[in-house]
Image (cartoon, rainbow, N blue to C red; front, side, top):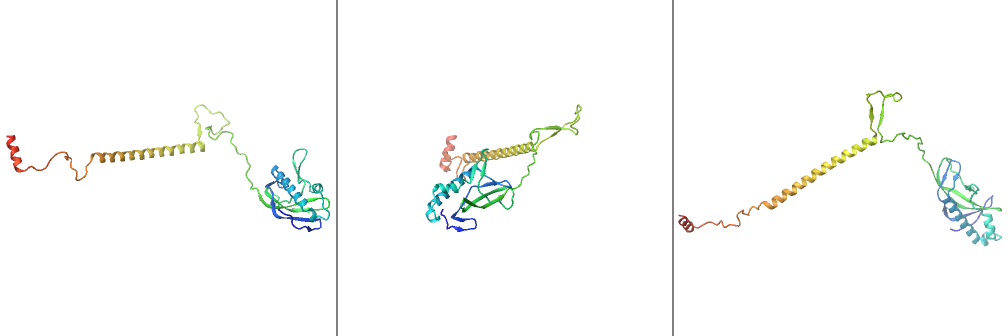
Length: 239
């Protein structure tokens, strides 16, 4: 980051920077910016950086070269902590046009050099209004999972033997519905596993106990045709 050439104004001399300098996000409460510790630390480091740039360019920027101590007295801290421990802004920050609660980021666009002070110049780089939300407290006095017994007239005592109405909450209904679906899934899975087991067993049976079309079940025995002479010899021996 470098300093640009000074510009003469009615209040003093305005100095710009060669690049934009964006600071951390800030909250806006509708009237003032709420300074955070992160923003204070970032702006403190930025202030020291600007002091260094001014001191380096003191010979060409000022007619009478100021000392570093003089520059520090002119460019005072932009945020301080008061006695109560709260942050106090010591420079002028631009306000959003909407004047509604939100968040935004500020950009340091330059400094204004006056006879008695050196002031930072800020611009709003981005601002977003907060979206309103319904802040009604609708918490139930009893837990949602509890079964409540109610009658038409809760202020009167319930007579003996009177029928009591049990109300089931949405959470209990959702739980039962989920359990029922899980049981259906489990039953379907068991059916699929049983069918696959049956298919495996059937395939194993056919692979082990069936024969090919050209295979004989008596392949281990000689069943070739006898000749007529062998047949006569067999008949004589048998007689």
